[in-house]
Length: 296
Image 1: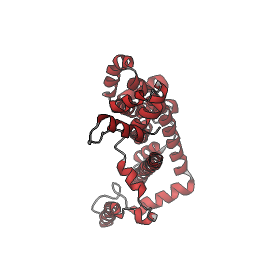
Image 2: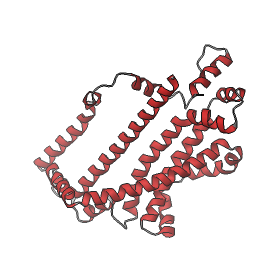
Image 3: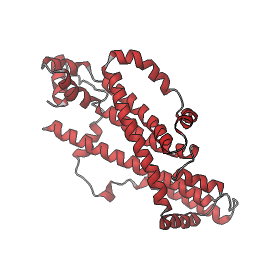
Image 4: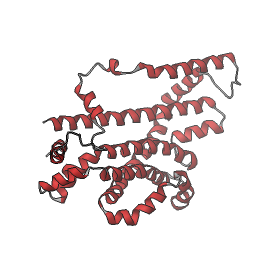
């Protein structure tokens, strides 16, 4: 039985014309509506207005560098950054650094996500866990992530193990918090309808609670992906051992090569944008399938 059936049953049981609102399950209609419309060609779906600001920024940057308003050592021209990018790509340095950073991020994301799902589920389903762990977890969330680096560096050193532990913490917190919130936000009426159908506890979790909490859980996963990427750069910058994009930025700074620094910044931004686009694409595909399943 799909979540849509529980929604209709809950509405009928209350004998009201008002629509039951599920904070986590009903946040999806916009995605459903987009999936229902005829698909346009890719080039027509892109909002090119978002490119106006970057193009204008590059034009201003180019004009300032050509006019020598700022010392060349402090602000290099876009042409120099392009030349550095070409050199980094041809030599394989970009691939080596980026693959090292993404490998660390993937490891930390997976470990942190699994831990966050387990912790969030425990806090969401168990009152005992909420009472025993909840206050400590709320306190733990208030501690700045970077405050753990001195302790992590002492316990795990400065290598990849320390970086992965740091990234796991970055991913764990949003996943745990949003999983717990999503479970708690499931309307009581849905659970009462499931009990009227004599659902077992496992059936209740699988057919009602998890589908209703899924949008909130996915929000936590999305934030974990972004936070772990941002934390990757912080970990590489503060725990300097090994290769990575963060180390590329350090090398450029120490050698006073602003072309290498700006190249690293561009790579960080483009990679973050790509991860964001990937997460949004997965979200649209997932909710489109849910829409099709609910319509059957």
